[in-house]
Length: 287
Image 1: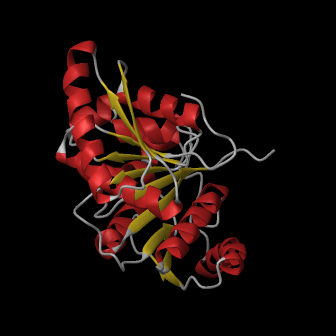
Image 2: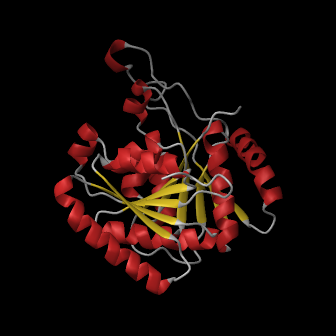
């Protein structure tokens, strides 16, 4: 499968026949239609599953054709792990984004083995949307988690573009980072306090966020923006904000292993706890 470099690539979505995958396919199809793009349904499984997968895919393509005859839908079945199949197909087609349904892997298994969502967001060089919860409200805001950092800059662009396409507002949520231990607390195992990024004063943080959003507000002048100051741990605050949202958009932070172990990944937490679809946008190198 080769990409057509003269137009934006398709929306690639994972499909395994589950209700969660079905919701992801519907979300992906609607987004592909809104953007005038094709849709690729990718199934990962062994040879024993191939015949069943082809039947399920054919039925899904038929249903999509009846609901939207103009949508260009293709299918791919490969014998490999889901994250490998999705990222490979996305690379081959130069996909605009990857869409997948939420998994229900247990907490312990997630901690040890990870999940398809986390695996794809860590390796895909394009936005990944995990469709969580029930149908999001059609007029809910786009929640943008932002802190003025490089990681959230491209996430802001995705959020404004999505809001403009769907006639939605953007709620830019900033949550000041909190130290793991306070100044008077005991250091871990006798070592130093491990907080490499203490919170900024509110006015400084606001200035950084406003500076980051300004070019996007100028590019999308019809998108209304509301600044929201989150309270508490960032993942928890964003989860609360997501309860009535159409989409939660986050930048992917590639912290080192030690900091990820201590602070956790905000995007990983959101992938498993948010009440609406979550878009994770990895910052791409410049130049």
